[in-house]
Image (cartoon, rainbow, N blue to C red; front, top):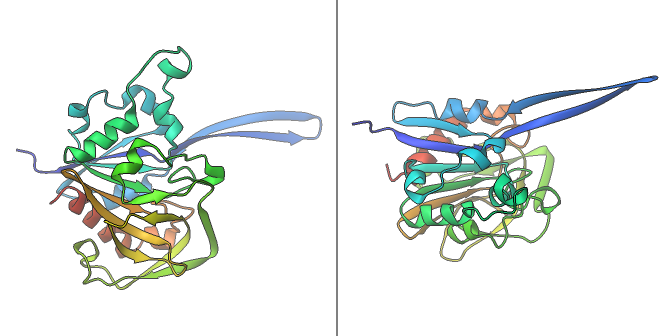
Length: 252
């Protein structure tokens, strides 16, 4: 029997449309990219099986039932707004009813799944509040309450986070300092949940909680540049932390 933890990362993809004006002439160019390089490398392990669902595939590939969703022990949501889950093609363009994917994710955690929301410009509330997770069903099974506006804290100078490596199994094997974070999302930890580490301004960095039969983590910074600098992403701390968090979410 395959004992590996099946992990599904949803998001971390984008399309760029560039307009160039050179004197009289104007032309456009487009390209597609993903931000999975570092986290996929970190989660390449004998006991972990990594899967990725890009933003533009959610409307087509996201499981339609709780049973299908529970085929994954851990789901990570990163840099993808609530609208992508709530406005599939059949609803937005064809005005048909469709499954509420955020309700499914809530049921997934309550039934025993492990969920982590990773920070970013379209996570938590995000840039201009466009992440829009405040008041959604999935917020009920995450260990933080989101703000109601743009929640970003930009730190181009870089910030460090001191951690107590003996305080939780998620930090096992790490050094006592995380460095190279260039920004994060602000949120408020729920009273019944546990803050494992915080930034200097008191914003929680990592918060964990249990809901129903499942577990969840709010991870306030990104898993890829730019907020997670290459310095951080290429460090041993990054790899150890992500493997530990996945194993904790999967109760492994």
